[in-house]
Length: 340
Image (cartoon, rainbow, N blue to C red):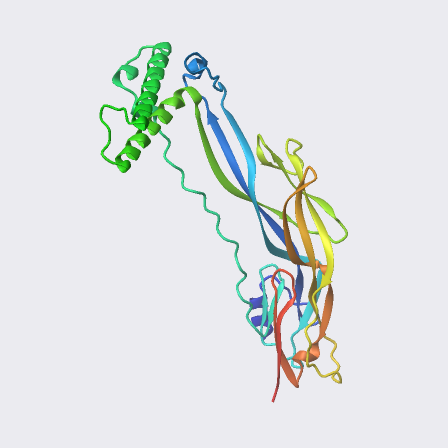
């Protein structure tokens, strides 16, 4: 039976007393940052924007980043300070042990459910950018220098605006037959102007990605660095001072889960002691420049306490089935049954 147990517990190890070592979890908060990247490319006729439209256009390319959303999820790592042992012998009715790949106990005499996975982030579909050349006349395309091209494109834009104005006032030579056709014609003119204007004003492309940083809340530490972020470089390393600090502020709400009642025989003594977590409730905020950007409430193993349950629950008179929370180590279910 020990060999079978070793197969199910994966990275746990058999100790010299014939038991199987396991760990309880330490709760980790995953901070999922939605980061928008904005890329600006100047138009090749930007220098002529002030001349024809009395508006100066940006001449230099740029890239900037901003956080547009924050979500929270929880996971766990093995807590090396919380190691226990399950004794495998004829005195104990332990038939199976379910641990994760890090040796964190998930279930005894039961199969732990698959942990809930965070939703997969999918970027929004990008619209195909307009190509100004698709809307240029042959004269514009054949212009031999930038000043001539700028003059012809500007004239084309003013002609488009004039046509749109005439349609809106009902004064065009060829008026549409109904409102739907009018809308179609106006949309086409707007698209033409937007495409041609890009050669003066430039183009801006926005793309949103998700990056995840892990925060391990620590009891007694109210404020800790969560990550650094720069408007010019995006998410940076925690030791890169180019990024501004964003902090995780943790509030211990001093509410600890209760131990479920058990039906173990108090008269039966047993040397095996099983440890489980009774997690504590916390509130975590992401704070930048003194302003809270997002907050999250959860239970965290390291803010509670460890309770022990007697090995008598797996003795000769009864056996038990225990399922633990993979993130907190709390007991999800505990059922006992007598042994004949």
